[in-house]
Length: 222
Image (cartoon, rainbow, N blue to C red; front, top):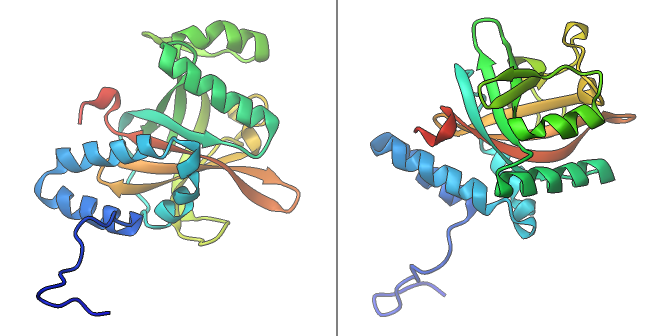
């Protein structure tokens, strides 16, 4: 049925994710700080398990970003695909809520195409137990490690869009555990706010095992 003058279209219908992204990108043209804050609020909304189905569609709407220059604040949306990833997801979430064990984000060097991950300082003892031979570096109140290379290229999985790929398999990094089999990808939602997904190398290729968000600069100073 078509709307008439006496039957206006409802303005209360919730926006689709595509409409929200378009709205955020339009807002960025007039109020970048507000657009960044709203995009981060969307990421926090998507941490709920019931909302994870929305993440692939949102990722597909992102664009390959220029590399940030320095520290980015991180937020874990979800990790799945295996028992240890699900356990890590729970540990990171709980740690962030309690101000303890957690992932703080990533740091990028656009000139060298390298970077590293940052953990909260209270992650040291658990890290020593689970990775006794991997030396995390200390800087201020954080631990640094899990070094990577980053570059723009097409994703190996559908929809094969251009992303900023983050890889951990360079032997010089001596990354522990399964990190050499991990590939992170980030796309930009609005300037300096990035949606990321983690891929794991398996027998048949790559599979998505989680999503995360980044914003630059760190500490919410947008």
